Image (tube, protein in one colour):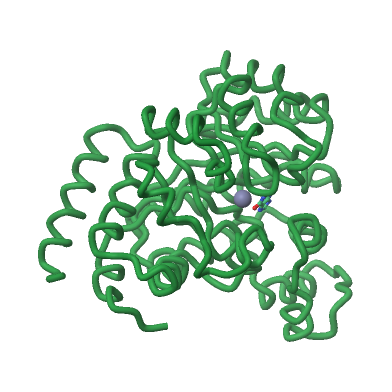
Length: 340
Ligand code: HPA
Ligand code: ZN
């Protein structure tokens, strides 16, 4: 993919705020971990796995995504998975990432919470020391499971909360509204954990409102259906509550028909703090920089929009104010060296 602003996009320091670490499990690693752990996969080859990645909607993806995660057993599997993502992130000039992990996908198969957490944490700490990539770790609850299951997961997480920076809500959106998790998120708030939630991906714009009003989230994951509710657009534009938008995911899960029809430009034009993210790059055909390049090409984004997207990502992050200011100044300095 070559696009007019390729050099600018490559040079800008980038942030990823919507990345499910289990969604970075490449078919090659899935095969290797299956072999290492004696797990039988329903695929004959890596090509077979890739060929199966044709999705009709969110649920058809989730079915394969949860099945694929079944090869992750030992602490070092979670470490290898996370380290591979971080190495890849460095090639995309990602300087900061805030990643989701789905503990219930693993504890539900008998893998201890500690095994999952320790493997991921070790890779994140190593990335800070060796790659200069800072990170936050977000425990994401599965909304197709009960609130009670979520509360038990929070209990399992308690010994590790010093290394967990916030909580999220993902999985099958329709029929599982944010309010289902009111008590759980209230408990997380009491513990001082910042909260985010997937909302307005497949579900209605009203789920975005509910995530804000009932769960008191500081950021909305996806949120593209907000454009169906002009009052909500005005509210989030005013508050600058960020949306972590994932263009390739939206196309692959048929939230949008084509990348050319993706609403990112409308979101920016409405004054929303929209950002670009990859969601589940091993499943959706592209990591962060590919999402940037592909979307810029398809929507013919202008230089000012690209720079705004880079700045939005730092603004939307959980970095402290001094780090945000430092990175945003770097974005502006680098952008100034690229003519229009
Ligand atoms: N939506 C909901 N749940 C998810 C997603 C998503 O895009 N990716 C991984 N789990
Ligand atoms: Zn997601």
